[in-house]
Length: 586
View 1 (cartoon, rainbow, N blue to C red):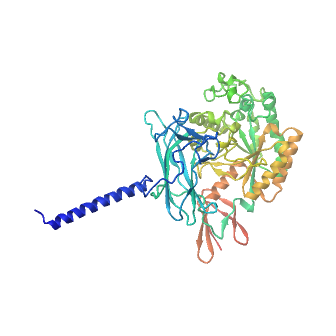
View 2 (cartoon, rainbow, N blue to C red):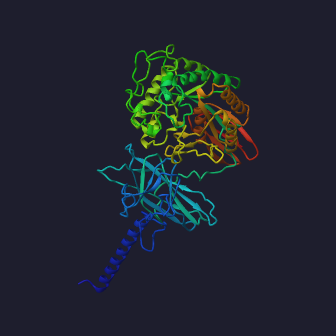
View 3 (cartoon, one colour):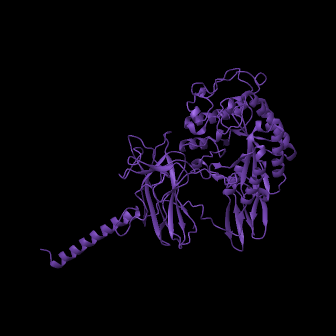
């Protein structure tokens, strides 16, 4: 028999091992943001998503960016998904949207975690991504620097897998934090379901901090625009032949939808002459967003593009003037003529004139389709044929797109992948519907924030830029929009269709706005893609502090920065900084 002392020691060791195992188990659950009695209690108000009595469709205390967020599930409307068995989940749609938890009290300099599950139920069969933003506030309700996670994948639901993706984060609160609200943001317009959401104390550092709020400050800063300019203005035009949006008329947002498409095509031609005459005294270089038939000199050989598709979504219910295109091939009305016989249909003879004047040509898509109604395969084919036909007229591959009919609403993560892979680095004419609108207007009709921003989930890859539609009655507003861009250090793309710069009133409005921008020393006027390229290059500039009040300014990008503006406490200096080069500033 073992001595009693050894038996007692073995028992103590066994108890200690058991306690250690329990502690490890508890710590693992805390790290996973899981429930632990007395240690990791639920902090999230209304984590069960109890419905409110109003018509918002939101749980009590929860918030959203726009419509497109609502309770769904078998217990709510008999549809949708449910993970935790309570019959309720939150549905979110819209790249400019978000879901936000109710605010909850927290302590300063303490760790808190959020855990949830998400799935994509996209009709376009697209996986997608979300990110979390921890929004801290002090006791007076003032916002403190936020923490933002990297983008986290969300699986596509299928009958075979039925998988939900875990989504979570854990961050330390600022020292003076008193409350926390967690925001969930999407990277696309894919439909996303969220369920089993919890906030608790503790948690492991699950995801890297990608916060734009944590910016190092120096006595030296990089100004946004070259040559000391305070704002950038692009002038651009949606330029379409009869085969573009004219024959495929959609009544939503088209002021000339009831007019003859051949006459409109001829005005699109005429506008090139009047616009260049307006620009010539000021040496303005603009951007022309062209459809595919703009590059053709004719089509007597009866070329077929994109297999001449039939787009069943082009219905009266979706805003078209008739249901004709649900059964008619999209390019079926091509007269198969030439520039001479059918000048409203083909604009290839005008391309050399634009290029010779230093103007830029970018994509309005080949087909002038509704971007959110087609899938990635159609996007890829359209982008490819635009580049091929443009090359026949000496135009480089497209790097920017103006969405026809502001049709960015409904783009899936796969669609954005396709644009990126095709070399698109900047976009404009985005949807003005609230849940998709990256540039909402204020009460005066101006873009509230006139600075370009990265497309969510495409940081450092695709820029989205705001635009302003110039019509004669909006000339004063356009000048106010330029002043706002100056005040914000931003940019604005002033645009119209080329057919809308042909009447005396239209020409006078454009002359006024162009002259004001071109003669304003605070404004840099440049083509759309050049402005986007500058912003991308400047965002890569690095500033390193050196001894004796010196700084090293580095340009790691592939573009030369001619006229880079640097702000010191007492003055602005302007330098040229070549690609891959560095310079010391005292």
